[in-house]
Amino acid sequence: MGRILPEMSYDLMVATTTEPPTAVIIDWVARYAGVRAAREGGGAGRGWQLERRRMLGWRHVATIDEPVRAEPGDLHEVLRAGVRNPDWLIGLHLPLGAPNDDRELALALATHLAETCEGAAFDPQLETLVWPAKPVRPVRAPREQRIRLIHLEWFIRPSRAAADLPSRVIELLEAHCPEALPRRYGSFEPPQERFEGVTAQHHFGAFWNEEASIEHGGSLFWTTTRPVLGGSATFPDRRDRFRPPGAARAVRVALSLDGTRVEDDAAWLGRTIELFATAADDLDAVYAHGYVERNVILRRGVWYDRDSEVYPRVIGRWFIGLPDAPMWLAWFGPEYARLVGPSFPTDQQRARGAGLLVQRGPRPMDLGELDDVPLLPAELVITRTAGAQRPAATVPDLD
Image 1 (tube, rainbow, N blue to C red):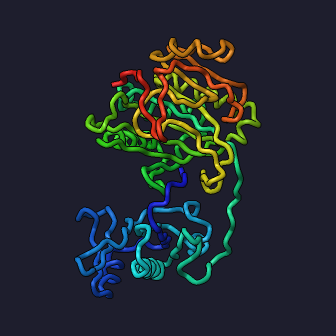
Image 2 (cartoon, rainbow, N blue to C red; image 1 turned 90 degrees about the vertical axis):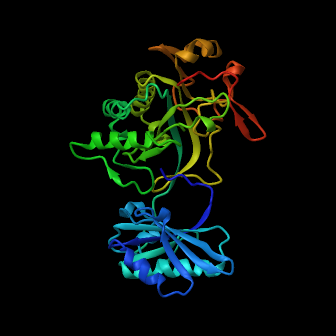
Image 3 (cartoon, rainbow, N blue to C red; image 1 turned 180 degrees about the vertical axis):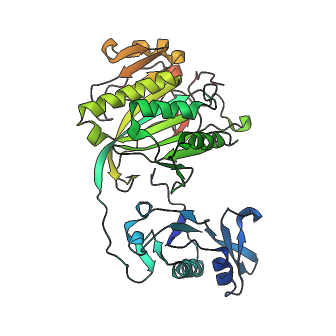
């Protein structure tokens, strides 16, 4: 869903009209003494490792991704202007601080791929074309705006997250918010799967369950129709040896919405609140929350910079208790409902099914507006020490 991650590599992107065949890389490598390229893991479909001979043996230069399908909207506007019909995308990734000769080697390969396969090579760090020298079409700057982002997130017990969970999610979205239904989906960007045709729900469910079966915990995300800005599902780590003491497992399902639009439309605001509550109840969530992040960038997706607010939510794959930050919307399953009810005014809460729905205000409230933090029972709330978050003293057993 386009969030900026910490910079871990120096990247180059190549968009092409024709799919780059393996021979393009093999023939290019053959031109250079002391350079080789090998398939990651020794098998097909995993990309390549580019290496160079040094005094102490072969050393990693760059990772070359397997080509993936792409659409014009997936590309940075400068890269899109460099190729007439972009159908394929390849990433090259060097370690931060890579020596100049390694960067030059990767730039030469990116240029070769672009020239050979009717494409363009792009440096995202400088936001400039590497090749061709001039764009083949005008660069169209994207419309960029700062928005209030509404983020909804549900924590679902693994015992309830059976094989039919994806179909239940799809049915909820169809009934309450069709704009949140998947358009494209996958486990990396750009998403490779399309939600279309009579078998759309079946294929989506199969993909979901395949990610859910990954031992270390898989994930998927999907694109949507505005004002919904994307959805995702994150699955728990199955390995007990990595579970922190006191932590529990939960499946996280999330949606993001353009709060700037939702807040100004009473119908959309009502639908958002109803979707949040209905999904929490129907999916038997142990906990769910809705919060607002300010000054988020909307441009070909959702992005953050130093001026964007990042909510102090619970991070990581484990369910470790209730957040220590106030939320505009909150749902407490039966494990929590009776215990947290006294913490909220009666006019902010209402029972729904086996749980408790709390709405702090009639419209989405951000951190600056939620100045009174509810005094939830201390044993249910996570703790933060020296920047680290630790499980609450009491976390429900969800297995």
